[in-house]
Each structure stands twice: as structure tokens, then as C-alpha cells.
Image 1: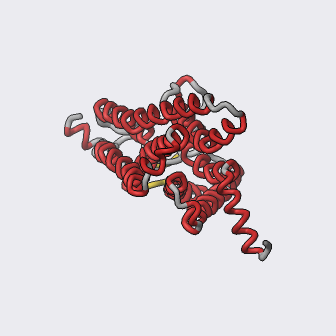
Image 2: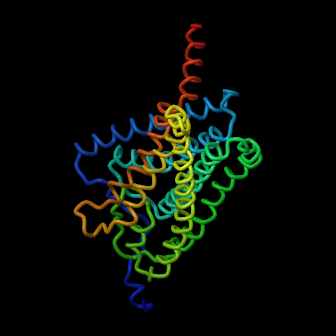
Image 3: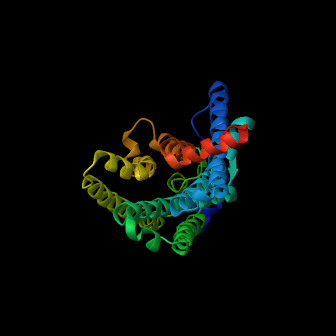
Length: 315
């Protein structure tokens, strides 16, 4: 772009999040729905963290990683939903460029961290089911802390590169983002710079953050299923698989929605999956994670019943 053309352009200082459409009635309904979702997400994940911290019987690797997942869910929701609620409450859908990049930075960091954390949890279940005699030796407390920290640090490290590249793009044209939060591709579409190289780097970093964890998770469950099928008794197979069924449901929900957003050609679909499927991994997954682990985990249910009985004064 020449200097003369650049002078005729207006530099964008804020974006407009189009969200799910306009209309007072729809805005009111979405506000109530997302408000209840946010309250339930914070309550459920805080409950999981408190339950894991307060009970000595849950101080094992599986629940240490579950506590990290719950903390990640709280951060996920708090990064997106308060801003979305404010937009519907005030009717003002503007967001400054700086805040937009900040929202994308934390979203990308948390998404990458969740990929690695789910992979670590699948490896933990692999050791518990396939190598039960060596489990406590292999998955010790020091390794748990290292794997948990590595999941968080890796996510924040990789997305720092992408945020730096995207924030250095020029925005001088339309400022309406066809999304309910600041994601990389909807934001890059508004840039008047050449985004080819940034798009390649984005795809590469996204592949590094998602493909290796996915392959580790997939291979772990292949070995888990093979091991479980070799157990002679049906009761033994059921007991062995119940220890990882909750995590498997969470993994399938998360990766299914990720693939739906970043693989499906949205230009061939009437409703962009960016607004539909993104709800699953940004809003619904943090909401249902505590429900899945609470309802399908016998240890959590027993601990909850014990604590409830103690609070109510029953034996």
C-alpha cells in the first residue's frame, strides 16, 4: 500500500462484535441464558476445586489434573462471558483493539493449555489402566506438578507468538467481527495487510498445539481399550473403563467442536460454525465438565455424599 493510499485510510481503533444477530427480544433471551450459564460454570468448577482441595482421599494425580481442568474452565468462561453479557446488557458491542487482542491472547492460551492438559489426563488414565502396578511410581507427585505446569506454560508460550503477529497487522477497513468474541481468523479477515504469512504461522502453531496432544490422547485410549477388552470378567471391564469414561466424553466433546470450527468450510454453510460450534468449546465445555465428572465418577459422588451428610448432621 502506498503512502497516499495509507493516508486515505482510517485506522481502526475499535471493533464491533456482531455476535448472534440483533433484536431486543433475542438480546434479552441470550443475556439470561448466558448469565445462567456463567453462574453455573463458576459454581460447578469452584465446587470441583474445593472438593479436591478439601478431601485427602482425592489428593491423587487424576483429581489434581481435574482441579487444573476446573480452574481452566473458570478462566475460559471469565475471559469471554462477562464481556458478552456486558454487550447484551448495554447494547454497545464495541470493543477496543487492545482489549480484543487481550481477549484473543487469553482465549488462545487457554485453548492450547486445555489440549495439552487433556493429553496429560489421557496419559494418566493409560498408566492407571495399562500399568497399574507401576502407576504410583511413574505418576508421582513431582511429575504431576511438572506436567500440569508444562500444560499451562506451553499454551501461553505458543499463543504469545500468534498474538504478537496478529497485533502487528494493519486494520483500516471494516471493523465488524462476525463472531461473539475475538478469534484469530475473524479478526484477520478485517486486516488490510497481507495476512498470508500470518495465516501460515497460525495454522502451524495451531497444529503444534492440537495435533500432538490429540495423537497422544488417541493412542492412549487405543491401548486402554485393548487392555480393557482383555479383562476376562465383564465386571472388571466395566470397573476399568469407568475410571476413564468421564475424561473420554470431555475429550470427544472438546475435539469435535474444535474440528467443526477450524476444519469445516464455513463459506459453504448458511450459518457460520464460528458462532455455533464455538459455543461448545468456549461456553458449554466448561459448563458440562463438572457435571460429567460429578455424575459419572463414583469417588466424587461418594465424597459429595459424605460431605453432604456431615453438613446436614446425618450419619
